[in-house]
Image 1 (cartoon, rainbow, N blue to C red):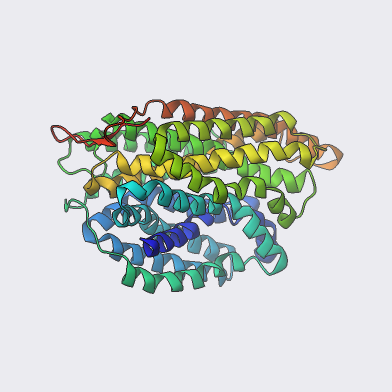
Image 2 (image 1 turned 180 degrees about the vertical axis):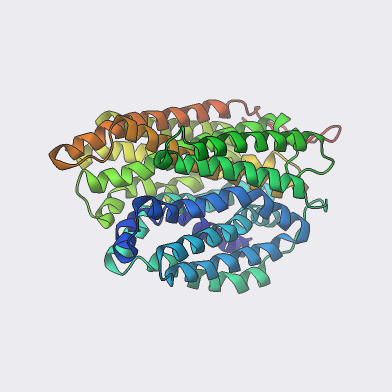
Length: 471
């Protein structure tokens, strides 16, 4: 059990870290490679895009051909692509390497939770998922700090070199210490994979390009409309097909539907807000990348302290109230930032918002993972993990796009003496939207049914997935 936790946590950390680790390194990358700002943005979005659209397919491959086997394949791809990114001679090759990194992450990331679930007894999953969630939550939130520190004190290439020794250390451990497991043995759903990947690609691509090309441009509208139609066809396929990649009947389960809606909204608000706040600390308040990251530690470091406690509480009282409280606190923290944001706000005024946000984020990660994995049959846990991770990544891409669009329309970067106030004018409404999205996530958690005191789970009837009933 301990080895499974170490292996899956390190792999999850690597994949989660690379979501935002590049953001504070963009000026240094531009100095080395040149290029327009929208070219540099692809060093972030190329990873998120391939990660999001291939997550469910990667999970399905693991169910079909062996979860440990595919986990090591994904980890190998991710490690090699990280080295390629560090050695990239130009911006285009860096973007290509980032896209391949996303492919590797999409294969290994959903399988980390499935492999960990198989290795841990049900009674101990809350605490173990708490540790796993703490590591993953820290990786997501500390990406700007790690990226900024390495860029400022060594070079931006080291944000990618960091993954190589970690990957090389984990690969042999995975082969020796993880047990092989499989899903239900159903044939690969090629049609569903194409529809889901194409639909998510169209929508995520449109969201990424919207602020660059204009929301009414032909390519953006084509991505949104075409992607929406493909996803509608994917839903129809999931209802009618004999062995679909994502059976739509799972969403008739209130626990599964509720926690996935909450996850999407949580990442929408959190990702978009971190993306803007890390720039606010540097652009407006004048901190260096390292100084900005250090000042965010009350937010980014809190999961290491609170997430294991949240996992323990979810074992005692159920995940539903813990997740709902965590999302509510995260919403309060973002709203606090929106109220106090100014060109001369002191760090003392920011500190309560940072701490509240950190506690809220920590209370979400571990219980949410437990709710997802407990809401389906063991043979469907790979599908559930892939779907949840895909929705989280889509939520992150959506959050950056929406909050950045609001930021640009109400303010922006500006030039000259009034640039700081222009930034704040855009930041405040964007943070309010982020807070509102996370608050809606807290409400979505209420759709999860309460847990009976006499039983953790209710067995399925008539082929329906078992349902977690939560206190």
